[in-house]
Image (tube, rainbow, N blue to C red):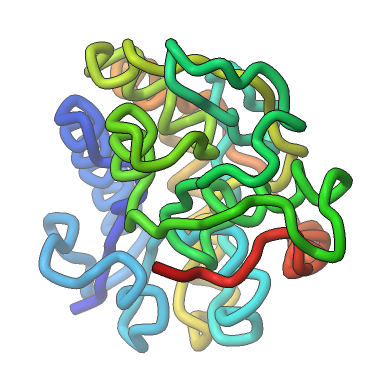
Length: 266
């Protein structure tokens, strides 16, 4: 049986329900096309990043930076989702740099020497696009006074609201999903800037997947975009299209591994 794990945008709950509905449609399409070993439900037991390199992987969604680095040559690109949320631009996305509502910080320069929250060092939206935004302001590869690692965008939001960090970069899709379905979580923050744009989180499959399997997966995703009965599901996810990017489109992310952010430390 293949593994399917689409776990990047599953909270708040309406997103999980919509993602399950999306997979149900994709599954029926793939079965009708003759693909075997297609699981009935999305896997909820394997950590999202552990699924990426599983040899039995059929479909998952990866973060863009790992896709361009540690996953390069080890998985195959299927397609890139296009969302309608503020901050999205076709298959590209950005992050919004946030501070507390009552903070005196107004512009990026004000963040110099302060504490920033990132979800993880290899996160494109939570760390590397943040790095790209402040790099022009860095001095000798340093800008922030301290970095704390929170493990998630939700954790970074909480760190800012609770005063453990002055700022964080939250990807535009996550921020809009929270604003729509759990607005109380973002009442205490405001946006002071945005990061550069980059290709958004790609759908991937196993590095051993055949070209025929990739064509079937792309066909299923395109069909889900066109299916009238899935309009509510697409609206919940903010999903409006599927783009076919190349691996080369993700290569600019490699340039974000510079020294504008200092090493993590307690």
